[in-house]
Length: 284
Image (cartoon, rainbow, N blue to C red; front, side):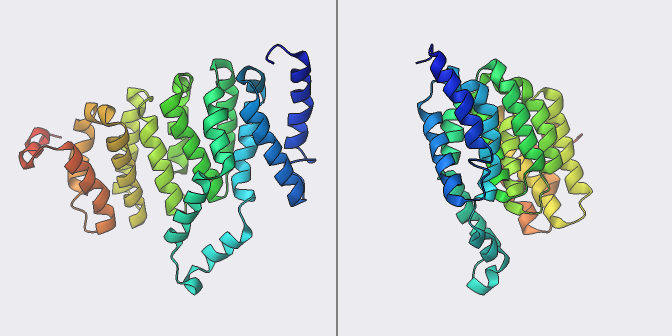
């Protein structure tokens, strides 16, 4: 009942308790599990108008907990992948699948982020920024990137915050984990739909800098992933700035490293009609 004073009072007591030391921050796993299950049920059944004041707090705690609640065995297997005949990428793909199917991630995407209005978006953006700056584990980082993708495609109220998150992701895209770098590049591609023209140009120049000033080959790979994500996920914006991007793509698609070359080659094939198209950008 959205007009019920009793419901508001109950949420005011219950949500902080379940998020605190008596709930999700408890050292007892069964207490954590009970708190999470209860919060998920509250989020799913509570009207948006009553839940909105608590969305930033719940979102921040859920995203941070994606890493802390991951079984320790996963980290052990990741560190000892060779013993089990696995690669780090194979394990990360399984971790990504687990995150996508997580009840917490489903609750974040389908209920928390979809229930925002303009006032609550401001506090939610602040909470998301805080998690993005402090996240240490792959699940939390990927959860942040999925949240940004969801907001970029579903929420009109997120547009004023797009430029800020583009700038923030540029600082974190060179993660030591390649899967996280790709995930952040993917989110950047979606954010370009809402970003200002100046920020789009800055991002293209940032990718060029990563490539030409690269300290190691993986930096050139990340550059290619950023450009490819922009071209694939925000194709209209990318086409508008083709003169700034495609000459660079043409050079980079001839890189001597196959892993670097691949995303640039895909971008060129998707956006250029034929071999004579290069003549359009000779001056650039």
